[in-house]
Image 1 (cartoon, rainbow, N blue to C red):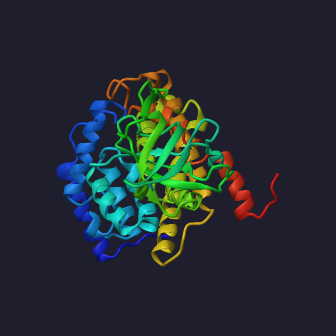
Image 2 (tube, rainbow, N blue to C red; image 1 turned 180 degrees about the horizontal axis):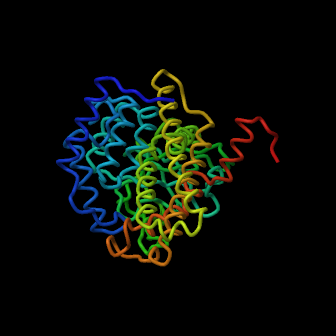
Image 3 (cartoon, helix red, strand yellow; image 1 turned 135 degrees about the vertical axis):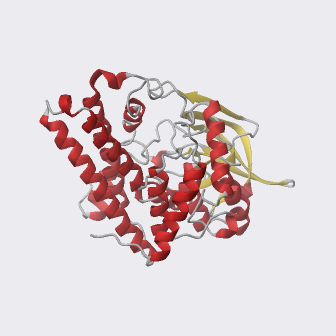
Length: 391
């Protein structure tokens, strides 16, 4: 497969590269898993929005550029090439936004999307619960509809856990059981919840690196206006599956992210080749990492081209999720093998070595778990793609 670009796509790449060269912070921002770093990343989202780069595939009417998926891939390549900050609002921009565009009312789109694009609203994910992780059909957190003279609302009680970005986020989107006595994927609804409402308690969860990238959310008689229901009541499972498709299939992890890591890994290997070559398997792992990153890129371009022509993402999204999560593990494990004891340094670069690989290594451990565990994805592949019987 050979990638070629039109004159307009080449001009678009030049425009992206020029803007990023002028605006990407000269010094890395602090981690968005800290209060100070979260504020810095929110400000970066606003800066991106000022140039209409925060959501390039969105319609211009809600803060985007109306770009197609090929242009999005070009943007991502330039974004990662420039070493721009990680996106603190990726839950909103890459996951909730496409779902809103598919299932939301016009009023919801006009209210939420511009505020999401500007960073005014940062979104957390509220799916997992104790006893309902990869098996989201086991969700128990209840949302009872109340039709009062002052207006209809959902009364929510229960708990969410492993809610990404929830410590400092403004809103969360999640699945709630709106039909009492329902089981499995029946009777669930997709609701958008302001995290500042009375009755909400947020408790941070510390990660392996000691920072609070996740949180538990407790709901105690929380009143959420009924207009925050996304899609029809009871159809939450279908809405969530669309969001999961975006998460696993294309938008959440662009190939440029892994190309950048593979490039850094090659540079690390070259800088320490004398010691790395004592174990020939390290060189093989570096070469394999680079090849897999390129293969994922070509596969994503193929998917994007199909979608541009009117196709859709199906159960093959599960193969993507397995591939990029295990590739990320391979690259970071290989880097740690090259670095040896130097890889154990926790501080920010340069104290942490050439690229601060340890933080990425720790985060990569979660890859096979979030966005649906890889074991569950293999079940989906077996049943829905290969037509195998349930075990």
